[in-house]
Picture 1 (cartoon, rainbow, N blue to C red):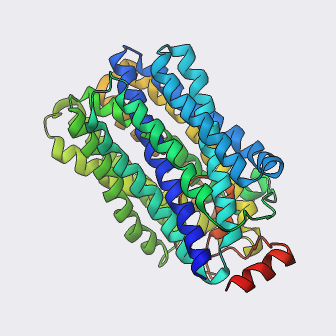
Picture 2: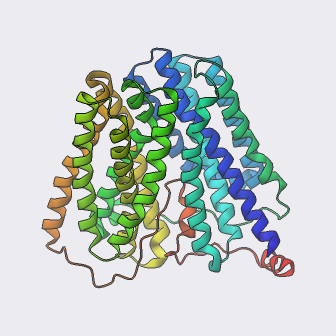
Amino acid sequence: MRSILVSIMALFLGIFLLLLGNSLLSTLLILRGIAEGFSGKFLGVLTSVYFLGAFVATLVASGMIKRMGHIRCFTFCTALLGCCTLTYALAVSPFAWLIIRFFTGFGVFAMYTVVESWLNGQTQDAYRSRVFSVYTLINLLAVAASQQLLLIDSVTNYTLFIVASLLVTAAIMPISWTRLQQPNVAIDMPSMSVLKVYDAAPVAVTGCLVSGLIMGPFWGLTPLFVSELGYSDKELATFISLSILCGAFIQYPVGRWSDHMDRRRVILFTFILGSLLALIMAIFAKYFAVERGLITALSALFCGLVLAIYPISVVHLVERIQKDHLVAGSSGLLMIYGLGSFVGPTVAGFTLEYMGPSALPTYYLAILTTFSIVLSIQLLRSRIIERPEDHESHYVAMVRTSQNVLPLHPESEEVLDEPEARRNEREDIL
């Protein structure tokens, strides 16, 4: 048992280092782009290209792992990301950054697939819920902690690019150090068409699309938004870290509340309340930018609400499909989220170009108001807004990485079996 736990901790450490370096890089690129005079339009497109690379990775990563194996695939992607991270500083031009950003998104999400399929192979059913919770926590902590690394040096120097490259490259060490053999598991996930997912739970599809349209620009363009408000690098790092950490804590009461009433009502409530918060943020960004503490608090509340939309949508879908279809259905929702993440930053980048600091919360306001109306129409058409009779599922906070994390979800009944010889070897270890 100890050997298995050590191997899982190695995977957790690897993904923590990866996210620490990649999240630092994501913020650093926006700040460096501002210093180089790149437009908000371009920085929005840059973020969208990252998610385009991520989408391509979800299509081909499983084949790469089958061909190369987990460790060699992880090593390949680590080398790719290390090279990309340093190349940003060597080739400071819009065209070069677009190409590099595509390969960065590809490499990061391919590595997600490696780690998550490996976790599936090493995790027994009894530990599934705990492993899933720890994995989600590690994701959020790494993103929040990475922002404090911005204080090491100026964004116009090479130092931060080197630090990001070191962290990403270091992620290979715990993966290579593990003594257990890499798993030989089936990592191909069954498919479920988006139309079938929509027929089963249209509100879940709407929720995931809105989540992508909001969180894509949030992850990619918040540094630009904060910089245009006149924040220093230290204030910017604090703003993003507090928004993510406070948001992570806020989404739990929102999610647990959804366990006691119709989740569609909860999603609609988050849309409406998010719209109000976005409106207040836009007003303060436009006329009261000096009230930085209040803007940060509003951002934390807003982040918590929006972070909860995706997992609530997944649980809503779970209640309307057979449990053994969770992976297929949630994979469809993940594709919808990816579409929103791809489109959102480009649209938000154009608004930032022409509207100034208040543009990002104004974009949030427009998206949430529009889809509040759409969601209200969906509920009226269904003529059912009461709590569903089959309400056995419970809210579980989750991250949007690759589809290979979905079997870890506590509600999933899908188990990725290992070969008999591998199971016997594990029993010998225990």
